[in-house]
Amino acid sequence: MTKVYDIAVLPGDGIGEEVVREGLKVLDACEEVFGFQTKRENMPYGADHYLATGETMPEEAIDRIRDMNAVLLGAIGDPRIEVGLLEFAIIAGLRFKLDLYVNLRPIKLYDARFCPLKDKGPEQVDMLICRENTEGAYSGIYGHLRKGTPDEVAHQSMVFTRKGVERIIRFAFEEAMKRPRKKLTMIDKANALRAQDLWTRTFEEVSREYPEIETDHAYIDAACMWMVKNPEWFDVAVTPNLFGDIITDLGAMVQGGMGIAASGNIHPGKVSMFEPIHGSAPKYKGQNKANPIATIMAVSMMLDFLGEKEAALKIEDSVRGLIVDGQIRSLSAGVHPTDEIGTMVAERVKG
Picture 1: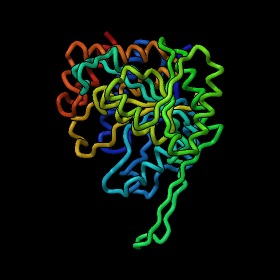
Picture 2: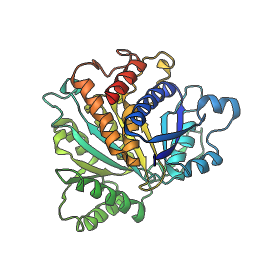
Picture 3: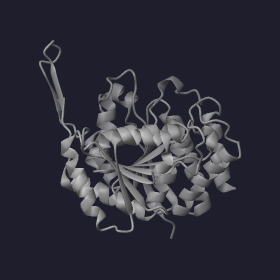
Picture 4: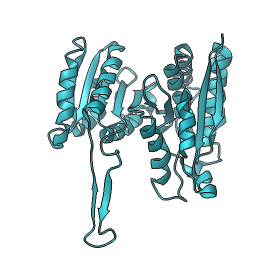
């Protein structure tokens, strides 16, 4: 019996519609080759919908998504709208309301010519960052006192729970078990942010259950330094929300830029969301210039999550092959038309 997966598609803003279109083109090719099907529901939430209706992301849409298998998101953000309004309502809304506590970011270099670091190649850049995705500085506890006056006070609280810390650390250990090196690094700043002692203690306690895993530790400032100096130092890393947001963008540049970096917002065993990590890039909207590889790789991550692992690997191998062969000459916007890259990957999948 053919497997059918319910997928919510949120193209969002800016280049979102264009890159998602190419991701779905590659998904079509995978369905043809590997024999599964997807039932896709396009959802309009984003800037245009908000400007027309005043609606960001209604609860009915969240409830509908709860009954689905996965979400493919393009990009959110528009200069016509207050910064953060849509991002917090849609992206953060999905993360928090669906309890997507894992932000999973593979950082993998396919060709040394795209790495900005001297003398580093694919053998030195192959890591997996497990970012806690629902707590920390992004938990939404903030406020202002005497706003707009010379005496204004602003505050934002970092919140960590034992449950939240332990489950992301446990997830990271399980991911490390799947990899040949079996090494896990915890990245925090517990020497200055003393609340993160909870991370230190929990990591040490959970590590006793995984004697096969080599463990290591780095403060976030040192981790950023080491990612530039010796990226081969990292295999799997686990980190709080804010630091994960920072270091994964650094990792994106090490692997070749935002145009190739994908992420998963995951709750194991439940509906999860997959997206490129780049923004909506409104200056490129409608120009067929944006690089869709990050979205295509998000489709690969989505298929891996759904259990279609052969299809997921085929997408990754196709992207790697096109890059290594030189058919994809650049990862920068405008070198290849958006639809050209999507077609090349889809044909490679089918070939």
